[in-house]
Length: 293
View 1 (cartoon, rainbow, N blue to C red):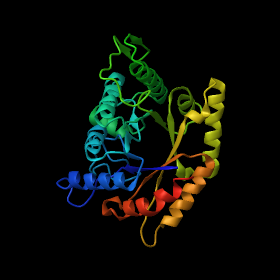
View 2: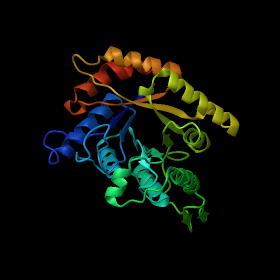
View 3: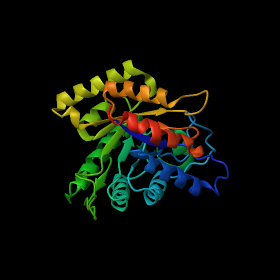
View 4: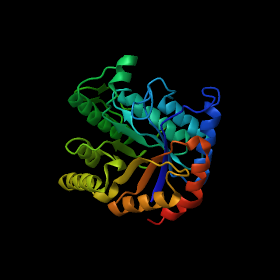
């Protein structure tokens, strides 16, 4: 099992003046500790499940390019980009640039978008959910076309590209992995089966729900004649390593339960990540212990 780190919050002491140095210290420590991946949210306002909208929030791809410059090993991605935020051609070019400049370490994390407040706040069109899923599917098709090296028009219902030129090519082969976030059984997991290299599920829903979601994904794969084993199963959860909260043993046991369900890549955010100590505990105790799961 691989372990990833999500950094969803930037309200640390001394911000904004110390934000860059703190973020760099977190990223370098996580990279050296053996975290397989580093993730940021792709939001423009902080989301209500984590904090107040007025809290500091970095633009996702600018943050990832910064992280690429201070790390050497960890893969980099968003959990996840809302499809409405960027035109698909620009989005693929952005992720492609991250992949090239990071030495082939980018993911394209994407979903149908849900946070209407930030869209309205910044003047981003926020169409109905049905339309957003149509846009998501076309974006996935465009990503595959651009990363295939095929230069030809794309004409969909929502997007029209005259030529899908994408140079230089990505370093990741065959392309940066496409990760779709979400747990919807009818549309989201079907899109994973048809277009994605990875999915991201919320671990907090519990083992029974996770098992059901994975069984649903496998059925979609079967119906599409897709090799289910080719999809990386990732989860997202919160871990609070601190006295009186969770211990390394607790997290190792949690990872064992996830691995038993078929999860290959457990991604965690850490409320006290800026203290650095939780990252060191992961590197010293947790990551080596779960590597064989």
